[in-house]
Length: 103
Image (cartoon, rainbow, N blue to C red; front, side):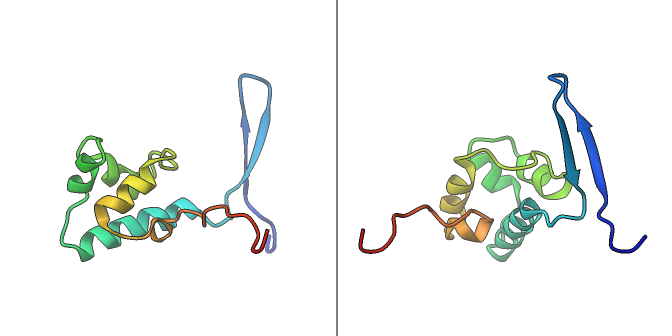
């Protein structure tokens, strides 16, 4: 059926229900692919940055290939950006909040 979005209904033990759109773009896929591309451009494996951010050697490989974890914990994109010497936004981070100009 054309035009319909694929969805997945998830039921939680609390009784809450979440309906997830499976056709929505995955911003974490962009972060994962960016991480892999940047490491490759620098001639690194994913094991090196993984250990440099304090994780086991397979951590970023799992993130890139399996999507686990679904998203990196709050401070890890910053630490990874420092290790790879890139702007955090290249790894999928949002622009930081800032007050309006002239306020």
